[in-house]
Image (cartoon, rainbow, N blue to C red):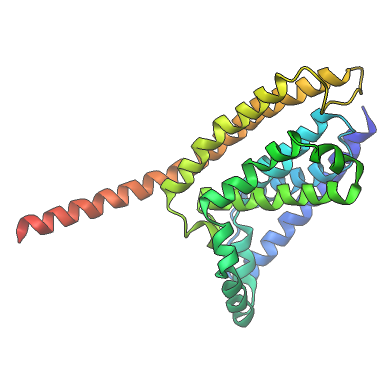
Length: 264
């Protein structure tokens, strides 16, 4: 078994264990019971983020796409479902909690947490990265490469919080807006994958592992297309119950308003 697999497994186990212990400790400090599924979701999500950051993917485009899917989509989805920000805020002392909530109400935070802005930051970044010379530049400059990964994580967590309605950032967004953003996400990844797949020159791929550069590029495009749509579908399924509950509440309010009008 390749050494990279063992390294990735060790990093994932360590990061997931630390996240699970920290989550349970913060919930105890807040006087809340820890839900096993939420703790497991946070642990797995953190483990995936750690693996995405780990130097185990090589230089190929396929590995870069796999890391992007872990850092920008699947990892953030699992982390956000556990609502770690809510656990942190609950564990803070009242003065610190009020200060944190004031920061979360800052106009800049309110702007980036709008569904349109969060969608642009999370979903259009791969287009700008892979269809411009920026990809080659970030691959050569280690600091820029790290900043790209951090952007994937931050924008992914922001987008998942907004569309799933989790935490202080997500609760201010109507469920219909989150569902619409997710519906638009599905063709976005598919289209980007098809664009890269149709390229005749290996502008992104790297010859490695017995594959030539063009084959690496096409394999990464297929992974982006299929896995990206699969993760977006999972996010859509996770957001659906919130949208359905919102629609039922809206229907009840309309029924009550009609009954009130009919009795007057």
